[in-house]
Length: 85
Length: 544
Image 1: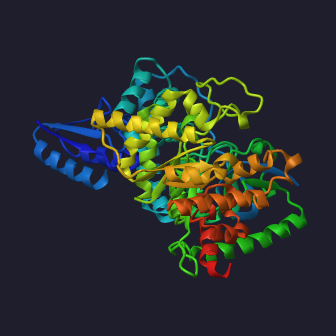
Image 2: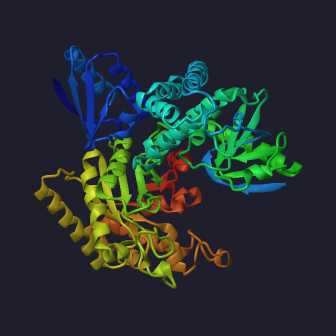
Image 3: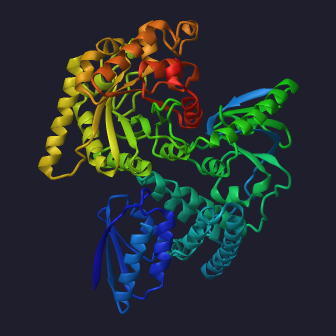
């Protein structure tokens, strides 16, 4: 299992557009990807669940990845966060 | 001729025929299915597939019309359509409850839309419109009805409200303006209109009853007016104003990136007054030097319950981030008995303008005040914050407000929560006593911002909303101007800055007086920033 945290810098938080991109990215991996923020957690492959987190600017996003391609997934997600959030 | 008024959502002035936008019709449907669950589910799957194809086309069209970022929303809709939680919920409605595809989709969409509406986050709340939009699309496909009427010639689009796909289905080059009966400054059509640079008036009561197809309307997006069947004279005036407006916009654009400096080199900052997080974008778009007045009331008046510290930190930090280092002056809560949120019961007052309002109310509700100050301090790390206390009339009040602020700083320090060490603390000068005593106040604050609306009202004892005394209410009255000049002089003597955030800051005829008196900041509505900057650059204070 791999885990990392990221503090959201985008003023609007994890809003629809980055949420959509993140879900699309997550769906490309076979491992399970769990997002947590705000005391809630969500399957990163499910758009409504990710949006429901309503993770905001300044909040910490915790990402857990587990499965065969977890290393690649974690790397891709970290890059994504730094670029889009 | 009929004049209707709504919320000015996007400026500009245009005349054109009405095009009543009606959402593609959906047929009535029953709730319990007469088909087998498998048949019903197949109907849903086919509809979803067709809806997906529509969304793909709509995405491509929107990329061409409005660009990639405006089009993104339809990819999001498509992903919603394929979301597992969404599909599971619909399957349960069909297989376990025996619903028709139509009813299953409606129930799931309602549930999901309500979930978004219940979130505190303003950005996420708006997603409920996307879910309703998606539901509408599926129902239209299921009922086999085609798309709505096509827009083939330039027209003013009128609707009860508009969902994202409504607006993008329209041929953009034919859309002259949007007018809607519902909606707010932040609703989808309002944002789109501002992006497209076309006028919009939203939240017009009685609009749909009054309008019909093809009738001529004038849409005045700057004043929030919709004029139905204008007479010849009004049409001509409108045309002349439109020509002048377009030329003026062109002229003003040149001042967006100019510095706010007079001919003789005096810097007079031109900032924006804002009343919401979204307004910060308008302030930036107009090239404001900062935010001279952020009214924090919206956080309280738009909410169902007292906004907690976290919600406030969120709003303030969003504005600070957007302003990207430019100063943001936040005025602490300024409400009185005339305007109270339901969760904050205040006794009725005979004369609320002279009653327990603004800073007085904050002292009476110490928890409300402390929560706001703590939130402001916590947000201060995200930009350049200044805190301003409203309606200070006596030195003791300023001392008390500063003591509460100091106490909050101490608390945060002990809790190990960071905050900026460079927060300017200032006060509104809007009560005549504060202006008269400004030489004493100036020693204890970092800045003054003169609230000329209240200063004028209190100095001349003339209610500015009472038409019968409208003639008395005058920003240029000598008594008011003397108070302004005295305040600016006191500020200069103590080396602090003095600005004006009342409406008179946007009155170019008063600018020479203000500049000469030593006013070094003017804060106006975002739409006036460029006009005032132009006036500043044309001024020569040595010639005054």
